[in-house]
Image 1: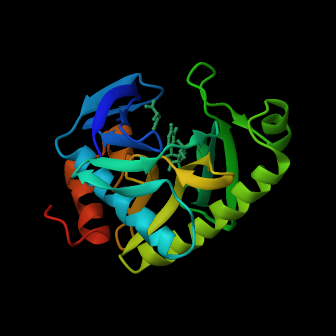
Image 2: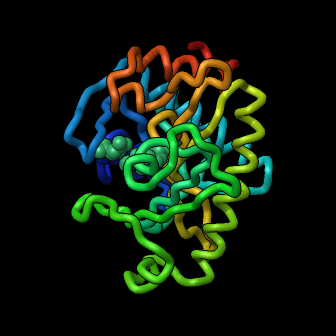
Length: 238
Ligand code: TMP
Ligand code: ASP
């Protein structure tokens, strides 16, 4: 398979066409942004750690019967994925109150949410990713009713698989963001599952080991991402 020209570049990943129309290459870059791109930086090996963590978690989910867009790794930070039609909904799963939830609602940071809370955001830089409900998703023609119920069920299954896996590795998963796509008539998990899109807290100390380190200047981002990579992908050379 040959990597061809760039198709588009987001805040942290670049997508390339390949000589196979059914496959794309997703490059995880070292750049990072927060607060709708207002805060910008870059961190060495960040793309590599995120790509490796994502690949491992996609494989774990596939092993547990969840269809994902993951195909293989082309290099340390380049992932070959199926060409899917991305559904413009950011699906947020929350297990512990953190981040915007504690700013917008009367939850105490660190409070357990049981059962987990699932939220939908409209994936749109132009509109600032506003929160939507199912009626809005239908009105905006983002997905069908059947797709939305499928997405909900998949997100909750993914959550319980990840919670067990991460718990064994000394990590709490307060919340994370998923994106789904359409592939050959089915809904598949797409995008990434990484330190940029999840909150990971050390189980013993409660320390943030994710992009909050960058968002809120909590310390050494590369050290935090490396620590998560060590626990989730101990087989890589970190
Ligand atoms: P929030 O508490 O800032 O709303 O974030 C909820 C989760 O979603 C958190 O795990 C980080 C992730 N997230 C993204 O992946 N992309 C984003 O643009 C934002 C704002 C959050
Ligand atoms: N990814 C978003 C941005 O770059 C926000 C965030 O993750 O905090 O602006």
